[in-house]
Structures are given as C-alpha cells and as structure tokens.
Image (cartoon, rainbow, N blue to C red):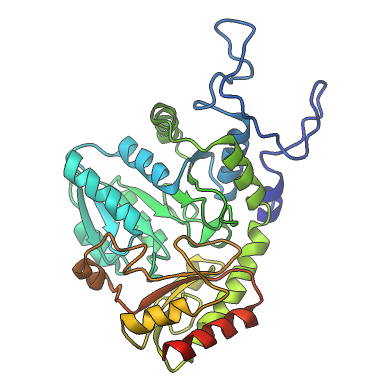
Length: 386
C-alpha cells in the first residue's frame, strides 16, 4: 500500500468473519477491563486497558505502518513517550549526545534525568557532523535528534549520523514531529527509533494530546511495551479514535500545510520588517540541499525574526486576527507564538541566545486557511506593529 492508503485502512480493516460486525470505523472500546471464559486465557489477548485496548492497538498498528516500522506504541503525550523511551534505554552513568536546538520540554526532561539519575548530556550543533562525532564518549548510549528543529528549523544529516552511530553501537532517536512520516522517514535513513507528538500534525485538529514511538527492533520494543504498561502513560481509547480519524487526512493536509507555508515564507522573506526567515523550503536556507535530499516536502512550520524588539513583537502578535497566539502546532488552524516567552521560556536567556532563539524570534504553524487571508492578516499586523 502507498502512504495515503495505509493512512486510511491499516488498523481498521472491517471484520467480516462470522460474528464480526463489519465496522468500517473501529469502535471506541471504553471498557477498562475484559472478561474471560478461562482463568488463564484472556479473551483475544485483552485483559486490562492499560495493558492493551483494541482501539489503541488499531492506532499503534497504523502508526507503525506510516513510519515503515514493525512496531508502534501510543502514549498520553509526546513527553510521556520520550520519558518511557529514556527510562527504558538509559541508566545512571550513561551519556547522550543531543541536538542543541531541541523542544524545551525535551530539554527539561533531560535536565531531570541529569539531576536525579546522573545521565550525562552533551548538546551540540548537529548540523555539523564533526560536532556529533567529537561529542561521542565510551559511555554514549543515544544520539537524540530533531530535524527540522524547534523552533529554528535546523536540519541534520540523519543518514550520516546514523552510520557513525552504528559503527560505535549507539542508538539514534529522531523526533520526526515537524516533518511527519509523510515528508521524512528516519528509519529508512538509518535511525533506530522515531518519536512523535501526535498532538501535532499526525492528529492535526488541536483536540487530542498524545505521543508515539515507532521502531523495528523487537528486543527494544518488548522493553518499551513492558514499560508502557508498567508506567501507564497510555493514550485513552477516545484519543486513540481521534488520532486514527485525524491520520486519514494526513497526506492531503501535509500537502496544503507545505504549500501555504512556502507562500508565507516567501512573503516574509521579502518583507522589509523581517530580518530572517527559517524555513527549509527556501533556497536561502543554509541546508536547503539536505532538506531536498532527506525530505520529500518541507512541512508547515517556520520561524522568523522581526526587525524590532519585544515591544514590536507583542504589538505584531496581538494585532493578528486569523492567527491565534497559542503554543502547539500542526493543526488545521494557523497558530503563532513567541518562543522566548512561551514554548522555550524554560531555557535561560543565555541558553536561548546561544542556540539562536532571540527575543525577536516568532514561530508560525501555518494552517489550512486560504493563504491570501493569512498573508493579509500578517500584513495588517506588521502595519500595527510599526
């Protein structure tokens, strides 16, 4: 099956056997527990919804298919997925090499692991392969990447980094939230594990918080599955249904997100009040060629620096009518936010500026509205800001 077909059918194949109901859409299995005829034999493998639930199982099967993975796991949030992954793969004294421009929630989790469990982290600008290679130590267990990164849209060469990691027996984890499996396949490029916030593009409608892990290593999957049950941060049946429904339009949504974002990035790049635009689809992006090489599209998130200070930023944001000032991204509606005071406020000013997150930086999640309306909204906000 091609991507669009898998996104609609995998996990929701109608049961046409005797006794089956032929549901085209899988029911929301709300039961917390499952009865059995025999004491030692669960009915169809189900015993308790934390351990396994038919609706969540359908979603996990589809998530795996989208990333061309053998296994998928769904969690109550992207951070829950990352926490279970870290607790499964890391021990006290281990070392992790991580991209310096990570989602601030990931950095916060890593700080907890460092402080409470003595896991060491080295943050590097992974755009440059030599930085990753130099940072590797004898006790390095993971290389943790985002590409494109949040919020500066930096890229790293997944294939090249994975080749280095494999030579040294190190696992590579890629947060593929921004690109989605529609535009980028980290496992095919050599990565070992993919994580997602399904809250974002995968669900796509800003009405469900969730996370996912996809991989093809059976041994690691068994450990993750055990800990998913033991820790209990699972996605609810209703949220699983919402994500299953959202995924069905992922391909067509991503095409429109990409198209709108490209037009807005081009508009911003030519605006006199914009100093810089970060979008991998622009030829001016320093890693444009890498984006074309490892991605089939550039997705719907971009960031830009306004030619002004915090005063102009606030005026600009607060005069938008169609864009909503809100955290998160990947929904059908356009969102906009100020990383320094919102999503990345956890980082100190020095940490933010070292990475490149200035007070004049604005992040945009481009939705599916008419792009002319969006550009007109931005234009009006610029006029008010200046």
